[in-house]
Length: 277
Image (cartoon, rainbow, N blue to C red; front, side, top):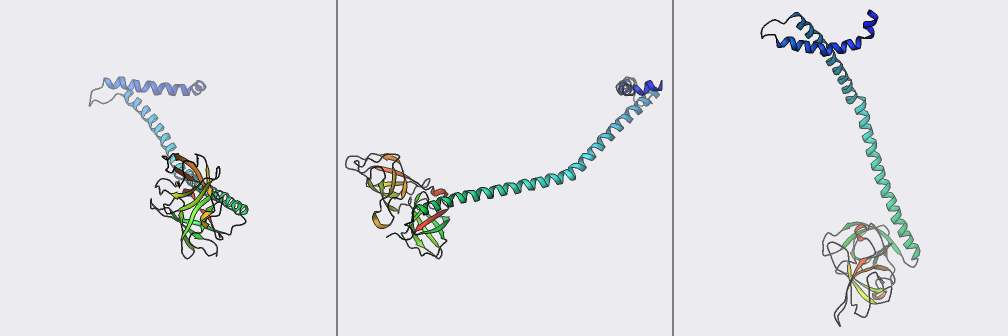
């Protein structure tokens, strides 16, 4: 008999947990308020109360263990993982910056190698003029060569502008998109001559080509380079690409716009050419 009860104890407990509450409900419905409960009712209440107390005790114990885990080792481990992830992100960002700088410096070295005739003073862009009407960047000179106004400033992709003022270790550079800038230019395709003048746009760094007649046949996509006239820029340095052409009326000049070859908005390193004759 004991062996049978032991084998079936789980089923018996389950039946009791269902039957006893129903039994208590049935008995309680017939009990008036203030009348002492019967013995079966009290017995059933004790059984259910004990079961509930045991269940609540188990839940409380599990909750306590979970709180200790969250508030202890697990929380500490999560904090350490967050710090490691933040450190890895910082190292990744720094590595990307180093790789980008190396790429830019390789391009500058390539420009220097391909133009051995130039004496080049390296410089880094350290500031920009916020005026929408004037396009100026400030550079820090990283060589002992003496600079002077009107010296050409270039990047690996082409023309940037001209030195405007020189300070102790610094210089202001008027960009080719500044309205005060004038650069003698020539079309690489058909050798049409013009002058590249800055437009001073607030939203971009475009310039225009002045003094092109309707016979010059400059088209969208043409590359404009320095002509070498004016004794400021050496010849055949890339200025930019023609992006817009409006035909002028008879006897008038064309309206031509040029996009600079250099991405001036992201400019960081430049060269100053110090030996233009």
